[in-house]
Image (tube, rainbow, N blue to C red; front, side):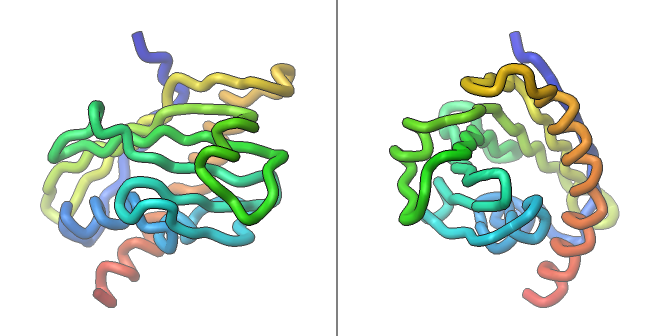
Length: 156
């Protein structure tokens, strides 16, 4: 059974195909990633990374859980690995792991995206209230992602 941390619904002036592409594009994740320092791609459309003040995150598509209308990402964050980054190094020094479900549906303005953060596991610093931190960060990202992705869709 999934343990839901937070759920957010956003509407974009972009097609579902555009939004689908944004989800695995490190430039679009960089639009809202907290404290962004750098980003890159391990496997195009499948695995990307973003680094910030609190560490580096691997965002990797879970093919078995994804479908035409949903992309499921496993997000693994390390606060100890240093560049040059690799997926294996991030996984080996994980601080936390969680799953993000990005469910897309066409709507009157373009795309309604329901994003669910779930199944958080902390490997270190277990005293940190990560559920609270994820919810607070998600709320802070809401308007940033809508504004940035709408701008990106218009310029495409």
